[in-house]
Image 1 (cartoon, rainbow, N blue to C red):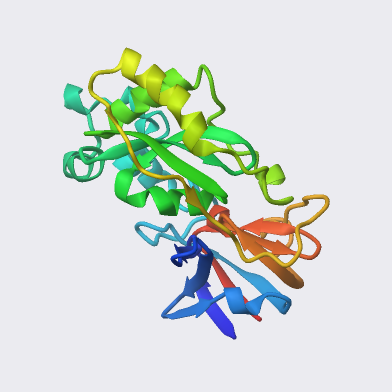
Image 2 (image 1 turned 60 degrees about the vertical axis):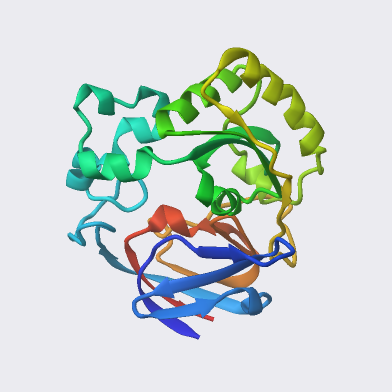
Amino acid sequence: MKLEGNLSKLLITCDKEGAAQYSLKLGDKEETLNDKLGQKITLTFQGAINCVTCQAPLKKTYNNGSCYKCFITLAQNDHCIFKPETCHFHLGTCRQTVWGEKNCFREHCLYLSNSSQLKVGITKYYKRINRWLDQGASQGIVLATVKNRIQSGLLEVFLKDFLQDKTNWRKMLQGKPELLDLKEIAKEYKNKICQEFNFAKISEDEPVSLSYPVEKYPEKVSSYSFDKQPKIEDCLMGIKGQYLILEKGVINLKKFSGYFVSIEI
């Protein structure tokens, strides 16, 4: 298998049992990765980088693949994407009104997930499974749904007084977390939401369990970087979240979105 093109995030789906299915698309070719475990992989950065949005050539990327112009002008890169409670659409200052209406004014959810530890997060409701897969979460459950992104951000800020909102990616890549009774744990936080917010609809969704194709987890996590090592040759031991787990290190392919690489397995 040989692919060449600009990198983007790994494509992930899951089967009915919650097993993550990975594929990688470069150029006009797409290849599955689950069946490549245990094989030697060679990743070579060819020296060129292109903006993932406008394809402009650049030397440095911002926010996983954007050029500086797209970073400071596109709504998808605005500060309110990272802190949704600061949404300023109602002030008439959204960078892209149509984009904001399409993406921020649709059903969102507040959830608990278990990747490295219990954490709280938000996402569009229909993308919840993909969000958990991207994080490398082994479990997830929806606490509540709301009508738009700013409302989900207000809920998240409230629960951040009680819960972590970040994944410890090193710990996530070192093995499976201890399984939690998410359904029981969720009851406590659903009650807190009910007491504070009348715009949230408490979810009755069941917990979701997810698994990943990993033959061996690293005892110590070290990272590969195309900026420091343009050519990487190693054995593919697993895939979790957006990371390839190699025998001697890991690499987050999403981090290098826009980099022109060749991959041979």
